[in-house]
Each structure stands twice: as C-alpha cells, then as structure tokens.
Image 1 (cartoon, rainbow over the protein chains, first blue to last red):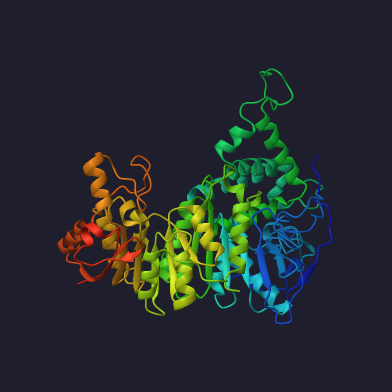
Image 2: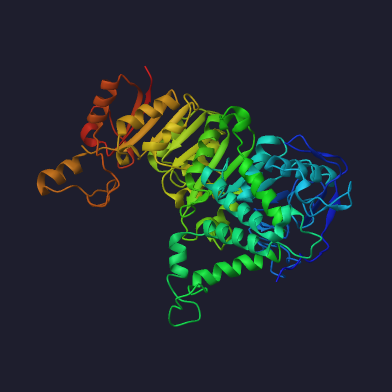
Amino acid sequence: MATRLQPVQHNQIELNRPLALDSGAALARPTIAFEAYGPLNTARSNVILICHALTMDQYVASTHPVTGKPGWWSKVVRPGGVIDTDRYHVICANVIGSCLGSSGPASVDPATGKPFAMSFPVVTIGDMVRAQAMLLDQLGVERLHAVIGGSMGGMQALAWAAHYPNRVERALIIASAARHSAQNIAFHEVGRQAIMADPDWRGGDYYATGRVPVKGLSVARMAAHITYLSEAGLTEKFGRQLQDREVKTFGFDADFQIESYLRHQGISFVDRFDANSYLYITRAMDYFDLADPHGGRLADAFRHSPVRFGLVSFDSDWLYPTAESRRIVQALHGAGAQASFVELSSPFGHDAFLLDSPEMWRLIAGFIEAGL
Amino acid sequence: MSPPILRPDLALIAAQVPTGARVLDVGCGDGTLMAALRDTKATDVRGLEIDPANVAAAMELGLAVVQGDADRDLADYPDDSFDIAILSQTLQTSHRPDRVIDQLLRIAPRAFVSFPNFAHWRVRLALMWNGRMPVTRLLPVAWYETPNIHHVTVSDFRDMLRDKGIRVEAAWYLSGDRPTSDAAASWRAEHAIFLISRT
C-alpha cells in the first residue's frame, strides 16, 4: 500500500543566485521546474505566466508525467485556445516547496546528501513569486503580458502585481483572496494534523523508509476536497446514493457514493504528491496576507499600480467567497488601480475555475487581448 | 471597427465629457458609453454594473468594469477619485436614489444623471384615462416586473436637488430623441439629463 513517489524527469533550471526567503533563511541554488508552450517573440513581449494552485503543477497544458492525465488547463492553454499558444509564450513553473521538480522538502539537501524533509525552510507565496521572477530573469524575460492564476495561483498573481508592478501588464486573479481566512487556515490545519498523526510520517523523515504517510495524506486530501465543492454540487452528483449496493451494510464500509468518491480522491492523490510538500505549501497559503506589511491597509499594497487587474469569483465558492474578491476590488479602487471584477454563477464551488466555463473562458480571452 | 451608435442621452453626455477626464459610469451596462468615451475622449473610464452578463461583455471589450450595486458598492470608492460620475437610466432603479446622488457627488465633484420623466404627457394620460401604470417606449415593462422602483419626474428631481443644496450646472430634455425646451420639460420631456455639482 505504502508507495513512494515515482522518480520522474522534469524540465528544470538551477537558479544562479541564492533565493532569499521571507523567513530570513535562504536556498543556495534552488531548482525550478517549469513547462513552456508557444513561440517567444523577438521582443519577448508575449509571455504569459500561469501560476498553479496548491496541488497542481507546471503541467498546465501537457500530459502529467505521473498520472498520464492531460494538463490541468489544457482546454484553455492550447494552440488557438483561450490562451493561444500560437501567439503567446506561456510559462508555468512548479512552486518552490512542491514536489514536481522544484526544490522542496523531498529534494536532497546538498549539505547532508539526504532529503531536506522538515529541515526545508518554510516558504511563502512571496518566496514562490520571487523564485519565478528569478527564473524569468534567467530566461531573459523582463515583462509579463499577463500573469494568471486561480486559487493559490491567484495569490501568486496578486503578489506578482504587488511586488513587481513594473514587470506585469495585467493580472487575472480567479477564485482567490488577498489573505487566508481563519476558516481556510482551519481546514489546512486539519489536513496537516492528519498527516502528522500518521505513524508513517515519522516527523517528516520517511523518504528512506520505503513508506509514506498514505493514510494521513489521503485524509488531508479528503477533507480539503470537500472544501473545493459545494453542498448543492455534492447533492446533485451524489445525494444519498449508495455505492455498488442495494442496502446499507450497518458497518463502516464506504456505503455512500460520496464516501467512495472521497476515498478514491484521497488515495489517488498520494500517488502524485509528497506529504511534506503538502505541509509546506498549505503553510505558505496560511501565511499569505498582502495587507500585513502595510498595517492591514490592502490598498497600500497596490498604490499607483500600473497593472490592469481582473478578478473573477464564483457564487458557490465558499472557500474563496466573492467577499474576498470584493475586498481586493475595494482596495484597488482605493489605490486608484484599474480593476475589473465579475462574480460568475456555477454550482461547482471553488473547483469551478478548473472546470468547463465558457463564460470564464470568454472573460479570460477578452482580458488578455484588451488594449492590443 | 465603426463606433457604436449611442442612445441619445448617452450621446449627449459623451459630447459633454471633457477629454482626458477620469470618469465613473455607474450602471454602465455593456460598456457602450465607456467604450465611446475611451475611444473618442481618451478618458480614464471605469464602470460599475449590476448584471454579470453585462460586466462580462464590457470586460471582453477591455473595459475596467466592476460588478456591483449602486446602492451598496459606491461606498467602496474613495472621495474625489473621479472628475465626473455618470448615472444614466439607473437612478429610478435604486433603492435610495437620494443616497446614490450623495455618493456620486462624494466620489466626483460633478455628475451626469439621466432618467425617464414620469410626468411626460403620455404617462399622465395613461394614468388619467386608463387609471393604470403606463407602459411607454422608455418605460416598456409592466409595473410588477419593472426594475424602475422609484419613478421620478423632472420637478421631483429638481426639488430634491434644491433640498440637498446641489447645483444644477445644466439640464437637457429629450422628447422622441429630440431636444425640448426647459419651460415645457415637465410634461414634454420623455427623458431628462442633468449635470449637477457640489455647491
């Protein structure tokens, strides 16, 4: 049952400078894994950076090397698509702290020759974005035509606009927030405690044991997955239907379809994600609050920003509710920045941003093309 | 792309907006006026619109439009963040038109406000002869489904401005899309457009 993550070759680059982290620590020569699609024009002015969500990765439009599934936004990012790779050079980098080729807790610490595990420094959304900026420096890309992200990707897009306003023409923030709420932190803490309670976690030092905290990471994923959906969506898809049986068993097997579905989500997640990375990235999200360095005044993070902002929320998303997007819009008004915002209707909760949404796709296309 | 044909009240407002002004269009619809202002007056124009489909359409035009409700969300804009606020055909749909006017003149020193005149003679006749809420060209929807919850006449509006101490810089009245005189506005104007400012 307890499997290790398959070793997979990723497209990687070693940063040529140390990455200074918000915690005060630094990573000497971190590795960043990334995928790039479409031609880079000679002016290098057609670059779109896509920032991925918590458990996503750089395989936005190419087959995932572990699961063999198509890229997580391959319907959007493709030749002739909403984000047209015939015309734009699209870059997506695996975030620092993750496990798909960028430096993270599963990476080998050059000082010890062993995986960092919990000795990997705690990283932040700001650190992820700083690493991406250094990657772009090395790739010779100064300015971004657009930075786009949903959920944690939206946090990065916001951080990009806040920290590098002169490198970003427009930022599209989908189903996201400028801070993690108490409820969001609470759900993450449940997930982390589930991982840490698994005896196979061993204080994070499981890489040499041949076992991984399957149970803990599965339960973390199950709990989190509920937050990505909506009650109406769950009721519509599963209701109280039983799984492969006519009657209840009066036991604790997965009687209900929703139980079976969640168990499957949990178990399949373990095959593609490192438990320690899950701890580190959820922590990075919890620490995210763009207003914090400005005495709580979010507008000050965007004062006189030349960036064009687009924000999209979904009415059934209770993890990153519309109120969080409105709070950003309010701050952007206060900062005098150019902002658009729309709440789209969807029964699918937070996950809506990853699903087929022609309404959202038209918005993205319009936003990218605007002013050209 | 040929410029879109503007509704007469919007064309009139567009003609009056100074080049380069910072403009907030409240109830901007699909962004037709905003696009015209951006393209012909090089204005920095932003919009607020309640209908998500309209917001999406405006965003697709590259316009900066925020989905929101004039009754609630104007409070989010800082004082004097615009030179001109525009409220076209939206006043009569708000819950508290008086407060919306206050917000407009807090956000910008001057505002264009346009609305259908409920004292137009056709409206008066409909009430007088039929005893029924009028359904006219500019008020095309039956009473139970109209978004216009605060019908207002030219005289009512003038009274409110006077009570609030708000200055009228100019007013235009349209009848059948053509201008009509100030004197006859109360009963001949189908449509009124006011340019108001703080005193």
